[in-house]
Length: 403
Image (cartoon, rainbow, N blue to C red; front, side, top):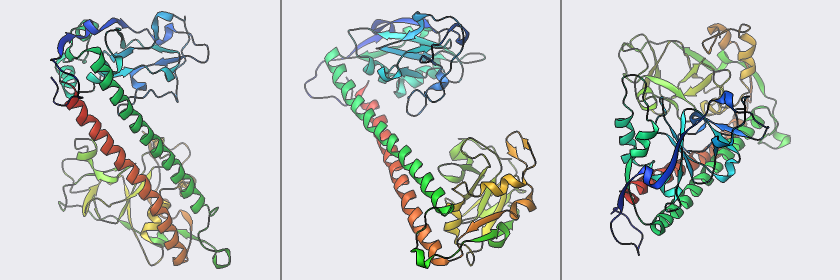
């Protein structure tokens, strides 16, 4: 019996193989074998978000080929990844997915009428299942789990009425988490919109009669480049994260990507900035972040580092300014045409510090902007913390509600 149980239910749960609660265990088909009518979706395991287990429909795949209805995913169907790094990942079909076909590296099972598909799916989110995947998927080369192995997976199942009770509760919990994710996305869009409006001067936070013209600064007018070497001062190797800014690589990647000898790296102190010239979808011209989480840290010499002269521009204002896209234009103008080396922008050091930035010189307006944008950011941070708490609670319940 599980450690946590709803009142009114008694008796031991029954140990069963997955093949006793589901049928099918069908392999998917290659993308080239499917023809789309413009509304159909083709799901690969890489389309499933690891954290939310939601299908990413923003970039649907539409290969050409012959339409075959037997590869259509439907109600009570669970998909399992059978090979590669995603082996063991599972996905429960949702009615909102619409007409959905599944890929060749997936296995489809259909939960039978004597069991609840939501309950069965949630058994694949437990630590017990994850340990089984790790042991079963071990191969001499690429990891994998075939249909016979999935069919042999054993777990404990209660009667259908208790499955329904647990499934309903977990479904309500997932809905709460989903709503929190939606709130976060809305706050992110609002934050981006407000930041752009502020730093493009479409939105001013001082009365019109008190407004002063913004000034064109060279970056060197309010920053000082940092080239001090680490020389063993700190053992914290930093990298840039969209959510956390400059963060210890060991926490972000669960390993150290930096060189074992960081003596030649740049040493950053708390409150100083680093520019990572590596591009991404979120940061087409690289990203600039301030060190806030640690007193000191070391960054690769590929980064451009600097401090802020607060007699000219408040550091908090600079932090929020670099969260906007208004500084992109200056970098774009100094990049050599098509000059990208494995995603690294060819931004010359001198050119970077000569880029022009339009910012308020009035300290009162700077302070108002900082206070306003800090409040918006705080709301987003609190919403993200609430999501983390919900996920932590959900994961804890999964370990208590199942055997």
